[in-house]
Each structure stands twice: as structure tokens, then as C-alpha cells.
Amino acid sequence: MLSLFHVPLSPFCRKVRLTLAEKRLEVKLIEERYWEAGTDFLRRNPAGKVPILRYDGRMLAESQAICEFLDDVHPEPSLMPNDPAGRYEVRRLCAWFDDTFHTEVTANLLYERVNKKLMGRGYPDSQKIKTGSTRIKYHLDYMSWLLEHRRWLAGNAMTLADFAAAAHLSCLDYINDVDWERAPLVKDWYATIKSRPAFRPLLADQVPGMPPPRRYADLDF
Image 1: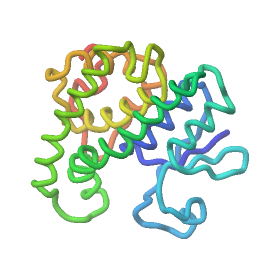
Image 2: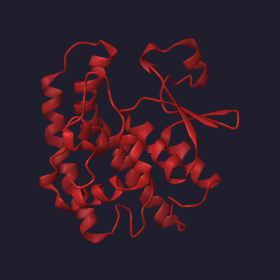
Image 3: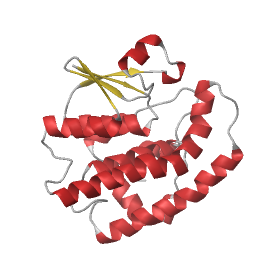
Image 4: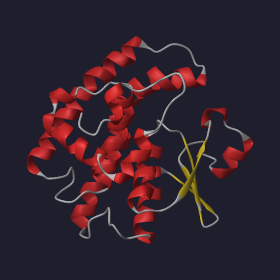
């Protein structure tokens, strides 16, 4: 069995979990308090980050690299287009969410509201939360524009780009920080992904002392 060292409300871990589940690969989930930087953990990944996937005796790190590795080794169902232009667009959007969206939104909302508490690193920074709440509006508008022209974010088929975006939004939805009414197209797209069997384990996640809103796991939200 594969083993994934993860944190439940990490969008990077969730992207890998979605990929594993979509490809019907059985995996053992091991929660990792990466911020404690234990010796065993640093042996698995000297960069001190999750996710880490134990696969066939190897320790694989970096979510995008892991997901593309899984797509190469387990090609069905495919999560990357066959053509170079299509693969470029998927990678561009994955980078958009894992870099720009993460820096401007996820780090300012999820990390301030949740991670600081879990790590015992003080109180949320209200200015960062305000920045994240402002910036998410622009990202939702951009996603709406994409979905006006495409069935899925990167084209007419579901790809890793959709999983990257859904992973971030699912974490923010857990803390009720997504204004779905602002972006009906994004809401419909998310409802479609949320209804996939691969998504069910994510909806069952619970952070002790921090329950999600009641509608979080509701497929018809």
C-alpha cells in the first residue's frame, strides 16, 4: 500500500489525495506535524514540507511532481492532455493556484485562521485576513472568465488544474471563506467536482476544535 504523509487542510496534500482517489489507488494517510521538523520527517523530505508520498520504497515530494508522476505511471483516467499546448495550460493554471492564489489568498486566510492555532504561533493577523478576503474576489472572477469559455478550467476535459483549484477552494470552504454567490459558474463547477467519489474523503475531514460549516459536505449547496 502507498503511504501519504499529509495535513488534512493542506491544499497541496489535497491535490495529491484527489489524484490518488481519482486513479483508485489505495493509500494509507499519515498525518504529519511538519512544523515540528522532526528528524524522521526531515529524512523523508529535507525541504520540510508535505505532502510526501511513499511509493514503491521511494519518498516522493512536491505536489505537482507527485501528481504528474502518478499520471505517467497510472495513465487512466488521464489528468493531463496529450498535446503540448494543453499540458502547458494545465501546468500554468496549477502554478497559478499553487503559487499566486496560495500566496495571495490561502496563506492569508487558511494559515492565519487555522495553521497559527494548530502550530501555537499566536493570533491571526487581521490585515492579512483582509488582504486574502479582497484578493479571492479577483481570483473567483478570473475563474468565472475561464469557465465562460471552457467546460473545465484548462479546457474541455477535467485535469490536474481543476484538482489544484478545488483543493485550495475546499480548504477555504471548510472555514467558510468563499463567497459562492459572487461566482455562480465557479459554484456549479465546484459542485460538479465535489460530487465525484474522489472528493468524498476530503469532505469527511475534521480539524479538532474547528468544525466546518454545516453545508460544507452538502453536495447540493
